[in-house]
Amino acid sequence: MISLEHCRKILNKTKSKYSDEEIKKIREFLYRMAQIDVNNFLTIKQQIVC
Image (cartoon, rainbow, N blue to C red; front, side, top):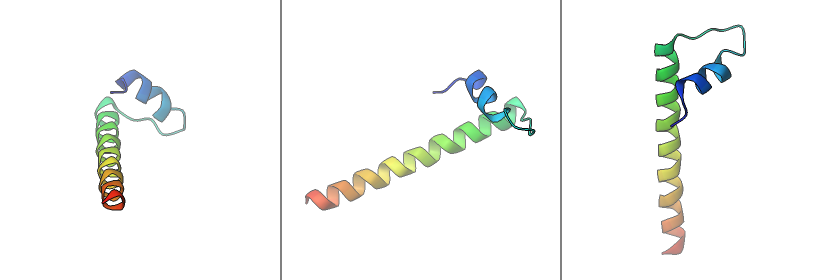
């Protein structure tokens, strides 16, 4: 998992400043989206092979 500090550096580069709680929520959302994408990829890959 990407550290909170690293996420803070990325997210707070713009004028927007995020709290630690907001950063945690954004990080969790992105991890969930990535998991959905991986699951979709594996499903499609499996359908092509079969």
